[in-house]
Amino acid sequence: MPKMTAPKTDRWVATLTTEGVFAVGGIPGLVIRVRGRSKQWFLRYRVNGKRRELSLGSYPEKTLSEARMLALEARKRITDGIDPLAERTLTKTRIVVTFEEAARQVIEAKRPEWKNPKHGAQWESTLTQYAYPVIGMMDLKEIDTPHVLKVLEPIWTTKNETASRLRGRIESVLSWGIARKYRNNPNPAKWTGHLDTLLPKPSKVQTVEHHKALHYDHIHAFIQTLHQRESISALALEFVILTACRSGEVRLATWDELDLEKRLWTIPAIRMKAGKEHTVPLSDGAMLMLEKLPRLGPYLFPGPKGKPLSDMALTQLMRGMGMSEVPHGFRSSFRDWAGETTAHPR
Image (cartoon, rainbow, N blue to C red):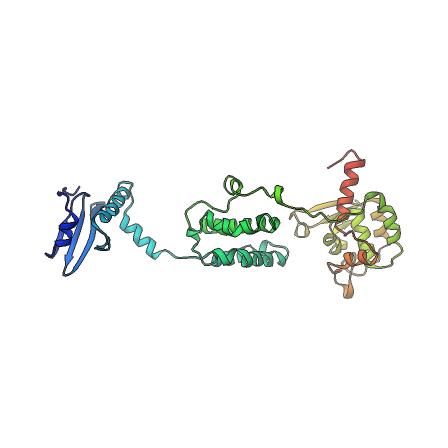
């Protein structure tokens, strides 16, 4: 421990003209170095037996009282086992990664796991429109709760579904930064135990638009009408109804996914929204359709040139029939029928 010197005063520092290094007292190791007209504050200390010298600024830009406060803070860090000079050097050499740079790396890293290219486009669109103007050029380690709220609050109640997804994307980018050691602080975009105390719950402000569905009492009559249309789209839509599957799963269905003896259709995980293989038992109606269906290639319901039907084919068919309901709504029809008329509500 350096020897204590009787505390000097501001007047003493101001009138000091002799060149050299002088202890000013008050804080062990605090000295002022005089060279010509320059006066510089330093804190001298030892770490692992090695002498260190931490610059605290120059006089009169830093007064004696300010130099003592800086020296006291540095001394506290030394007591906690932190070398303030090494810490300052690390800060100067630390790589700065902006939020936008990090987000682009996260998008590229996650792209292989997205089945639909639209997911990447949605990430880029929401971040570009809402996040980048506020935090795009900020260093990851500097982003805190007020910055995240500045992004989310303007659209939280008016576009909550978009805002909720945006929050999750910001959280993912900052979590990536934490994992990569580009930031040390907790994630300010975390919902549970953090933002949920500052923003209304999505369920309280979100307006959910369900796919418009045909009541199950009208399904039989609709299928009879469907039988009057001789098209691959009509057959595919009927299969959607008979299997309660998504239209995309039906449009891309292939013959080798079927086990007609066991009356099963196995949809591979890559085509399932949940990413898990799904087996669908085939009803009498579905089996009857398949028996009559011509094999015109690998797909059950081929479009032009043997390619799958377009993603709008079934929707356009229903619109052409004067229907306001949508193909996906038949899943809701099935769920309502099961919940209201069977012993298997789920």
